[in-house]
Length: 355
Image (cartoon, rainbow, N blue to C red; front, side):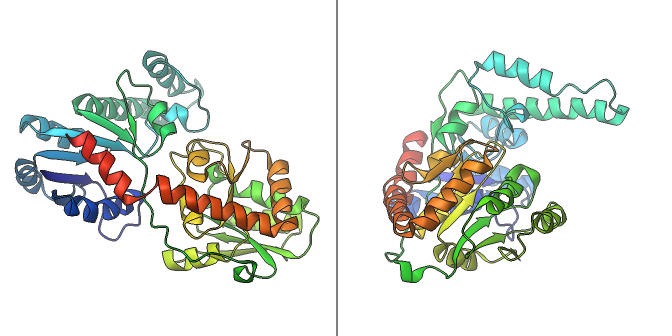
């Protein structure tokens, strides 16, 4: 079989989609599948046609209607994988609906308020056009997959969307208390924006009675100034350190030496790859019960309801009081991803969709 894998990223971009593709290509080749990877962001339409013509099956990783139309015109089977939320209305609030209920709700939620400026009102038509593009691409696709069971269900399609998890390497030596930084450290990794809930972590930090611990915040974004001011307002400067952007290797080293990873998101995370990364280095996670985060964290890690920073603080205190238990949770999480998030499993499930 000849498999063309499409995505929309540039060579220098750091993206979960590219990580996923890099992880599955060696396994596909080992199974006798000829593969080519095409970025519709950087390649010409002539290249698109040439590569589509070459392929037996096309594995799309974006809602690219023009590319999907070319695939259908050339008679190719499309296996699409969704990596992001399909509907704007599911960004912060999610409940199960039928497709038509979801479609109607999406249209209503994207209507402009009466007091909006004209340009914002006109932007509603842009949102509807993008929705039409996504739906058009979905209708042209033959098989459908998503990066988590949550994301698969959130599409509300009348046809089946399979959960096809991100694979992650899980090679890591067993962790002991001696591997943890002193004082004990909690680490957040991700964008600094309101929907990621870093302010909830800071408010939880203020509530913890123990004095001898640290909170690392890795990442950059629009919320940095507001979060820095909140640290001062809460008077927790001695506990919190903003580390900025770090390389992937540095991030894993910091997370491995942490007592726990914190993922306090407000929005419905499609998957929550950062929880998998923590498990890969045997670090336990404390995550918000939103989107696909609980799936990625597994049953051994600690969860709290969205916005509930008081329970987050309690879980952090539990880890500080019982660091050996936190290590045990990290070990169980490592076992979980070693079974459920392997590249072999991802390749096998993708090939089943391609047949």
